[in-house]
Image (tube, rainbow, N blue to C red; front, side, top):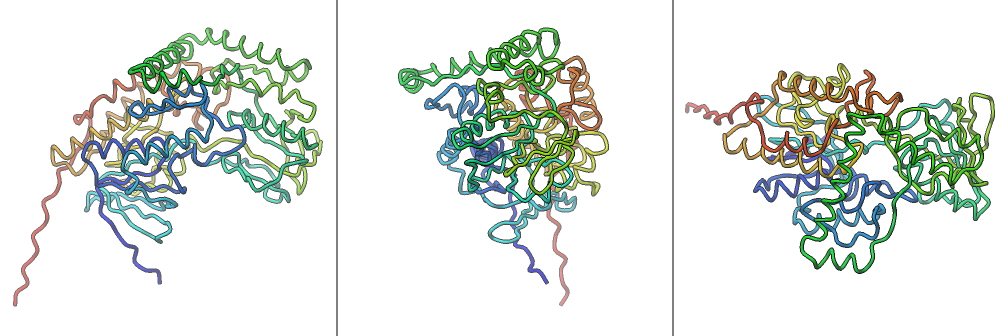
Length: 511
């Protein structure tokens, strides 16, 4: 018989300690909402930048924009920051914020259920202290869309006798020297790790097979290191770094019309990518294999100066025939070719349109969030709150991701909305706020209407932006400043609310 779990009452329970969860903790604390706990399934802050340690891991958003607006970093080493630097930045910000005493690590959310009688979320967690339950006024999910690796459904992969791991769970204990390595996938992670594998294995007599389903548009990476003088200016000249950040932000926002309203303008991006290919690859057949046939922007546009040279190297083969199965020591493609392999690296992305956290959250009517979204696709009012799930706030929710700029801008916009909601609830003595179905439906219809003409919806490819219904429930279809404008204040009139119930008097017991 299992022991009764300990229970703790808190005002706010935050799930995840990446950029979203950390921002929520800091801003709640600043607003005087200090009764919160952050639970994180991994061992430290940083989210994807803590767990993704594969060779060559770097950000593809400029460093000046990939930081909190309230915690600029004058010490970025390069225009695009490496993983270890970004993780160290989040750790420093967390330490300086004074909120780490309310973080609980190595702890996973097992079950979260709305309790109408208590007007609270009852959240069951498992961690080093065993099973702990929280009764929280609000549940703030910052679990992220790129947190749970997606493994491919390939016949025989479970019987592979060599080492196999996902790029997001890199096994640094495996000695790759001299090995034959197969990499499945050619997305954002693969184009960073394959060049590093190519160099390592070239020195040790090893080989890389790269299995590609669909090529990506890959443009040059405008990379350079910041000079000591630039860093000194960032640190000591008031407003200098913020001015550069504003310039970078404006440059990225200027790209939105091409994505959202004038897809034909993406031809300029395609020209850049073709030149990138031509500079590195001389073999006509390999050029053909790596050149997409869909409109640039339909899938995520990638940036790299190393990807195409790596594919052209003597110790790398690009395989475009579909994988039929995996045997104990080889990958077999549909044409019958069997290629021996010692190590299998899976770089096949994440569960973006079916976030695993949704399976663990049960709303007012007894259905999980996963069940609700399975019926019609992901949907949330302003990408943040969901009808049927009172007091649930989803940071980086449906249609909040970006195909052109920094997610931290979106995260800060949503966190401000959450903090304003907490203030409104306290000010008006409200126990419950739940978006009206009509408000959520109108918002979703508006987003889908704006998404229709974008290259993200109509570019002619099958991308991870799209759900099983063919809807792009991932990206925001416009400028980031318009999103922020929508979330500038908490619009209580769009919510069904319930006041805090007065405590019931105890019945007198007659003697």
